[in-house]
Image 1 (tube, rainbow, N blue to C red):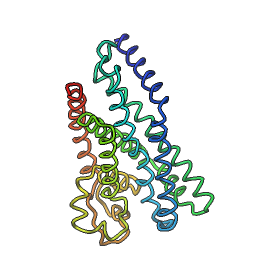
Image 2 (cartoon, helix red, strand yellow):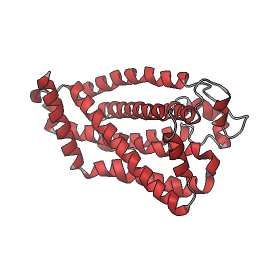
Image 3 (cartoon, rainbow, N blue to C red):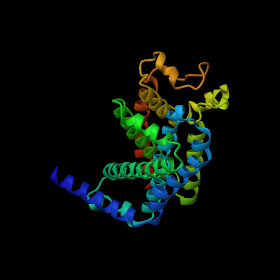
Image 4 (tube, rainbow, N blue to C red):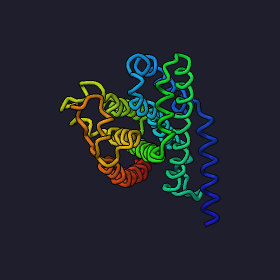
Length: 280
């Protein structure tokens, strides 16, 4: 047990050291999330979101944790081209231990991306005196359901990480896997109910496609936690802008347990995909 802990600790140090020495890590963890959030603030949040609809800012802000999926696909493909992954067993590190270690590092980086982006948007919010982002964050952290939001973020980041492992397991070309990752990120953002106040989100075709997006489920867990409308009561309608809007989930159990069931399945597929990548 002690030997395993030492190997796990050594693996963490090695992955942190090598990832932090790569310029791509900072691009995927800091630069891209910050650019995305600043763009969304200037061209969407500040001009189009009213102060009483601060609830819809949360998912946009949390997307900064999704973008680092590019880090996962990049680092696994890069590692596979070196001797490190090929010699894992010689180092006493199992594939499962490696994936678990990389997950821990990814979670750290994902929250770093969120924190840095949040700080920058709060500064912009204060400078423009709109206080929309500040209102959203203040409301979130000032209620007991904030714990649900944190758990939701952890589960969301884990599922995104597993998705990145699956992609980099089946695809070995770095340009192809990164291009596909960008397409998936675009799909998740376009279909994840980030724009629930807009008419197109009420379209039946959009709603049908959006159920294929994992972000829809995580975003609705957040919406329910923000409004404290877990049990399908009248408060669930505080989420929607119009009383006649489509409410895809009337309680938190459907999206929460859907993702809890999907995560282990994704974990198995990602582990199998990672192992298969060594046989190519």
